[in-house]
Amino acid sequence: MIHTAPINLRPPLPQISENNRLRLFSGSANPALAQEVARYLGMDLGPMVRKQFADGELYVQIQESIRGCDVYLIQPCCHPVNDRLMELLIVIDACRRASARQITAVIPYYCYARADRKTAGRESITAKLVANLMTEAGANRILAMDLHSAQIQGYFDIPLDHVYGSPVLIDYLKSKELPDLVVVSPDIGGVARARAFAKKLNDAPLAIIDKRRQAHNVAEVMNVIGDVSGKTAVMVDDMIDTAGTITEGARFLREQGARQVYACATHAVFSPPAIERLSSGVLEEVIVTNTIPLPQSKWFEQLRVLSVANLLGETIWRIHEDSSVSSMFR
Image 1 (tube, rainbow, N blue to C red):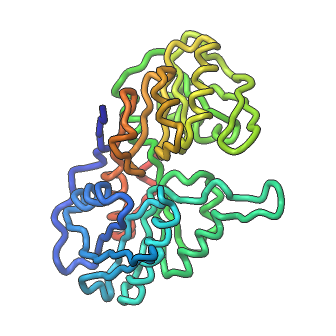
Image 2: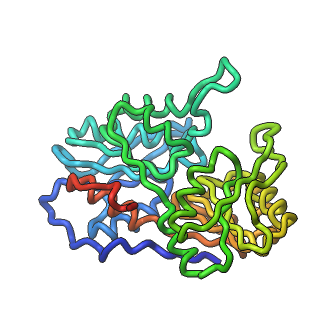
Image 3: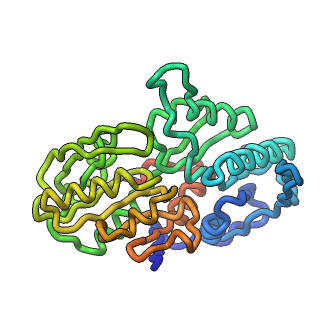
């Protein structure tokens, strides 16, 4: 059963006047999220024609004048990743050629982010490559949510606003009033994220799972740093892909005496066999956001989906009004 609980930063904004220069468009990746953002801003999504030729090539046409406007394009680069990314680049190019004053790519889920450095030599840093592609296409600004690593912000030579899905996750967890809470990082690399999460949960204690990764999407749990015995463990990560890390970590935490285990992540990638693993019963709940759309075939009993539409809408408005975005998270 899906539970949608949008964060309420403030009441919805008044209807934007017709002479306002803000324009909002959606790619085909997550139109439902884009529509929610538009409702929060009190406006409609801009009209756009999107076609696909027989060989798979995409065609896009903006169907209203955007000359001199500030355009925001909402498109998570989720499955099928290459199609979503190429569509975003084409829409950016179309807006640039239509004389938009400023183009902001709103990317709830940033693709190719896991290859953010060279670890074995003779390999591509795809996170940087995607940044170059968006800049060359004509984007003037990026709004991204929960990048896989903070260093990706440095790959852009244009302004980038980085926001987090944690406020909606934390609000939901606080509403549950879970006893004896401990926040758990599923690996060493996620310690900073888990520590910040724990601080906002009334300075909850922190635990860290030490694991050795044998290959991509394969993880072996080795040890836990911190006390989880008799506690309610909340595992925090930026994404859940095949769910190997989360489920193996949850099993290990239960072996170490954790009473209940919850999983929280902003991005529900859910590549096979994630659904089978997550619905196996080892987790009390799997709490994610709607940055990536989930078809009904990927729903399961323990899943809870929270909306980040109001958070994105508020961020877009603050960028447009040249006010602070960082103050939203203080």
